[in-house]
Every structure is written in structure tokens, then in C-alpha cells.
Image 1 (cartoon, rainbow, N blue to C red):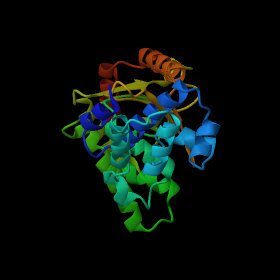
Image 2: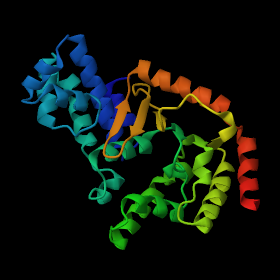
Image 3: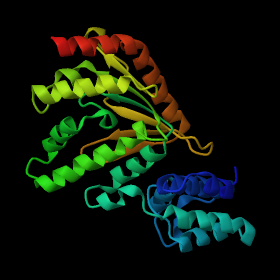
Length: 292
């Protein structure tokens, strides 16, 4: 797939994916010429770390930097350069979440862009209901855990941001969401009994959607493959984009896109799906929880 095809073929409003596509192209060109990240960074007056972030699509591109890198990589034909430079311009367009930029740390802004472009997300959670499946009241309770002194108006905006993200599950271009959640998630009361009841009812409603699969990992299963903690695997419709493994921490996040890494996490997710209750068993468990 050519760079021009990538830029033209992907829907508008996905700057994160466009950055990743461009970064992937630049990384391919650099490695083909056997140029180190240090030398590439020197060419654009930057560090090797910035080259790494550019190639992962984690930061925006300056058109001048892309032009200088293309020259360094031997891409001097105007017809070959034009699609990549155009991709750089498109990749710098703000996403819908731009208006929430004051609330979003840079590392999470990257994730929202990836989430907005993914066709499939598989996730494991051991503390909270996944954000894409949270009811508004439950989302507020989760947000308040880290923002208990935050003004109410800001909390409202954070809830609105989470609700807006959920369009990826219920909108016209709905992605496939496959979530494995630990039993502790639905046992832990957040926001009070009524909030939890509403959240479980919401989970049951979401499991009725053909694009949503929820499995419960019950206490009876004992130990399991994801002892290291929660993670998500995002898959994209573009052939040039690798799967991305996302692991959130308190003040940062880890993104893994090397095949050897993502394949390991996919194997763990597959084992979790076998160990967990089936979707039908999960639904019955949640229904029993409501009636108890």
C-alpha cells in the first residue's frame, strides 16, 4: 500500500492513525538505508528519542522535519515526496478530542486517537469496568477517585469525554469490543449500591449488542495468565498498522507495537478468554447479581 493510498483511504478525523502511518513509512525508509536513529535525529536537530516517538506516531510532525528526513533517506523525487508531505499535513489536524485538550495528558491523548481508529479492541480489566462500557454515574464515581477536589464543572467535562468515546461502540462505525473483566470489578462497590446496580444493568444492555462480548473471570478460576495487570490490544483495518498493546499507569502509559510483543499479549488474552466464563455464563452471573 502506498503512502498516497494510506492518506486517501483512511477516513478524515483520524490524525493519530495518520501519524502512525507516516511514522511507519519513515521507519521503513530509515531502516532500508541502514541509518541510525541518532543520525536521523541529527538531521532534524533532534534526539534519537524524538525519532523513536515520530516513528511510533506519538508526536506531531513538522513538515520541514519530514522533508529533511526524506532527503536523508534518498527520497528526492517530487512525485514520491508529495504524498508523504501531504500525509504530514493531514496528520497535524486536531481530532474531536482537541476541545478536551486541557484535561488530557499527552500519553492518553495518543490512546484516544488509537481508540477512535481501531476496528477491534480486546481488553482485560481487574479493577474497573472498561471505560467504553461505563454508565455515566459509574464513570463519575471512577473519575472522582482521582479528582475528589476538582470543580464539578470539570468533572462534568471528564464524564462527557468518556461518554463521547463510547460512540466507538454504539456509533455508525462501531468497533468490536471483547472485554474480560475480573469478578472483583462487579463486586467492588463504586458510587454506592444504586450506581453499581445501574452499571450492571448497563453491562447487560451492552452485551446484547452484536459487536460487544463480555466475559467474567470468576474468583473460582484462581490464578490466571494476566497476573501482571490490565491491558488492551488494539487492531486497525489498515494493513500497514501493527497491533498496539496499551497498558495504563498512574501518570503515564506504555505502548507496545512490535509483533513479538503484541503476539505474546494476544496469547495471554486468548488464554484468559478460555479461562473466563462464557458470554452466556457471564450474562447469567450478572442477572443473578442484580436479583441477589
